Figure 1 (cartoon, rainbow, N blue to C red):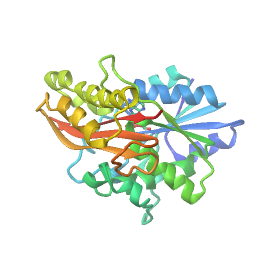
Figure 2: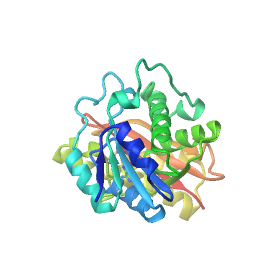
Figure 3: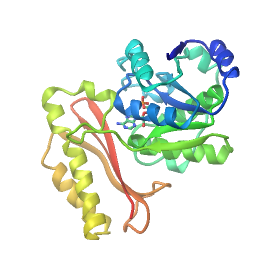
Figure 4: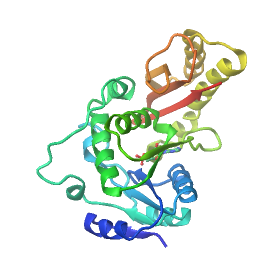
Length: 280
Ligand code: AMP
């Protein structure tokens, strides 16, 4: 049975009785199989797993979808249970941000490019809430998806810089059979947009193969090949397509070590992100 915990006080009491390692899966809810895979990994590697559901107001910009972000706690509890989580922790804003709240965490360079450029303040909101959630959860390990690659490396840097005693695990992106990365926001896509969306992964994956299998290392050639495929779907309004080094996410001209091809763009009103890792 997955226990639903709604207050920090109740969580602290539950936490204090736990033995063995605790795995933590922070989410904003509207859980799908991507989240499910994170939960399953944690359940396999720890004695207990807590999944948090918290739609964090401070990581949404003024014109973003905070109000309409899907909230599906009952279904979330059912999925958490199916995956074997011990707890679903859905705290209130006032438990997460004791008032008056005035503290924040800025991680610097790694949070400034890519999504950071298009979503000012987003990673400050993410780093701050994740710090606070880590501190509340008191977990030994925390699980994040590769789909939000920049988020992972922002948190990774924060954990390193602040010496937090939590081990981070990155879980590969879970996709639909046609390649579209699962996302809580996919439900906003119209039928026609949903049909177009898999081209994003096809473009990224074809450039990755060009690099890994055919030895093309120049970013200009790799990006041009991905752009050529993306260009077949003029409905997609590109925000960025970049080849960056891992883990510092700086643009590279030549692939010489671990890298990632990263994408963000809009399809209708829905913002989609995706990436592929390039490793040898
Ligand atoms: P969110 O609820 O969107 O904040 O996501 C919570 C966690 O689930 C983050 O670590 C995400 O990277 C991860 N996640 C979301 N979608 C996927 C996916 N398709 N595959 C793997 N992990 C995912």
